View (cartoon, rainbow, N blue to C red):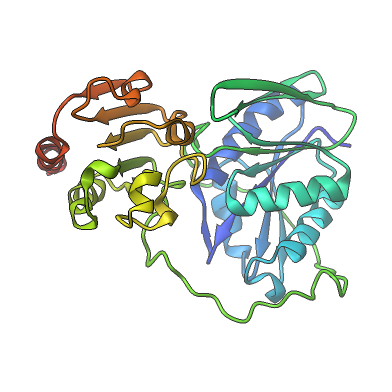
Length: 328
């Protein structure tokens, strides 16, 4: 087993998720402790063009599994492809973004390679050969620390925005290693007949640096327009509480919370959200939290960095106007 750190680069239609660049920065930091280097794994069809971009963010070697059978995500073929890369690279640690795809793959990889596994980590460090990770548990009531043994492969998924991505280095290069895909009949038996997109190009709350969320206080779907205008100015995403989604104000794909999506943006603006436990569990890892609510006793203020006891319909348009002015 080498001392290298391998990062799974998640890409969709040739576009790399920002969380992957964040993990490359983390991998380089960990490699300084292990004495190895940061390497990357890119899986899909026609992914060779992504190597230069991955190298710019710090990968010293990039393993690619390029095959038409990997054009669309299927769990078994992707797991087989990454397992083949692990066999070739023989890394100490594999880092995977905490996304729907990442959760699916990490557990499969750990089972295949009999590896130590930690999901949804917010802190990762090395202690000798061991990997030490922290993750929130029980609806974010406390953080638990785990030690993954250095005696076996370590697999960890890391929450988006837990670490910064660093700046891309112009002219950086990386060695490219092509790994062939070999699938068994059982790994290739699931076929994709059709894909229907429901996002309509809307930025997902788990990938946005800024999230503007609304609660039941918005009263109807049309009122979310004020939040959408603010999110557009900030190049952010619109989220919603479970109560707002259950009431039909927003689709459940935008639900933030323990039963929805966990987000860790640089800025989270909660508008008209009181702060139920399940919602707080989904956003309390945000770097800066701003709460806008007319109820000064609302639980959301207990976790907010900045609290505004004011009607959101008065404040949010003013914020939008001011940000537009600042951005020219």
